[in-house]
Amino acid sequence: MSKKILLVSRHAPYGSSTAREAIDVALAAAIYDQDIGILFMDDGVFQLLKDHQGKYINQKNIDSMLSALALYGIEKIYVHQESLDNRTITTNELILDDLQLLNSIDVGHLLSQQDQLLSF
Amino acid sequence: MDHASIMIFSLAIYSAPYSSQASYTAYQFAVALLSQGHSLHRVFFYQDGVHNATNLAAPPQDEFDLQKAWQQLAKDYQLDLVVCIAAALRRGILNEGEAKRYDKASHNCAEEFTISGLGQLVEAAAVSDKLISFGY
Amino acid sequence: MSTLHTINKSPYAHNALSSCLKVCAMNDGILLLEDGVFGALISAPGAQELQILIKHGANVFALVNDIKARGLEEKVAPDIKLIDYNTFVQLTLDHRCVQSWY
Image (cartoon, rainbow over all chains, first blue to last red; front, side):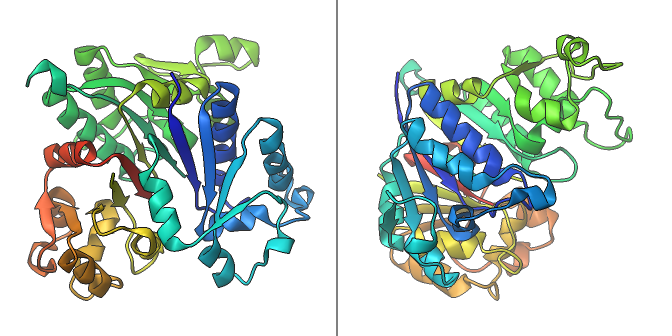
């Protein structure tokens, strides 16, 4: 049985384990053949910046984990445009190319169209 | 309640007991849904939620013992309380098998809690009508 | 279909409520719980937006146990409905999905 699942990732990388453990859930969902998408919003968009160097705090890079999403067949990756704008991040600073930028109303629609939400 | 309106729930709990209120809220939600005749397919403990499974917590006697409450609820309703293995190992929640595997002196996963993989959260999302997340 | 949004952080300290308000649709529901119930105060950040949403048909709830525990019963803004855990369960059934903002 497959359900349409959206993982919502709203927390910054490194300072807490939330971002990393959310990605692990997305990968697990993909391994089990679920129809999984990911939405990055609020501080979650900081995960998408290029050139992480986690070695300086003895952590594995989050951006390389995110690069693996496509390898696992996760193609629906959404980013809340206003969260980028509020943090003066432009799309050419982001690690992933195939992102769907959504305004706030679109995010509301996206949430309402899922079978399950995984909130992180 | 008529049979047709029975819904299947699963809960995902991401917060430690005591430090945060969220796992208590999840417990009260579980009690409420079960008392209404709904089904609770699984409670999945992830992130700091794995601390709910330690059998070494010794809260003062005049305080609510959330872990005991989960265990009693699990006994009463044959609940599946699952602790994420990757999150648990990192935070020092081990069952006997994992303690042996990692050559640790002791183990502390409480009765009624099972250690398993993230696939159990994914499966819960797939088979449940409602998956509710309780963040820290 | 509509979404139930739960908020468990104080709007004085966190953006959980303000982020939720950005994406909340008029037929959605918002449930304030744990420290999220501080968002039910008349003076809270986001209080005006909550009242506007309510006027447009959205339903805003607060968990009564969390309100009472914090001594807020007399300070709750009008039209925010105080509910118990049983009604929380019912709200999850009345909406398609639950997004937890924390």
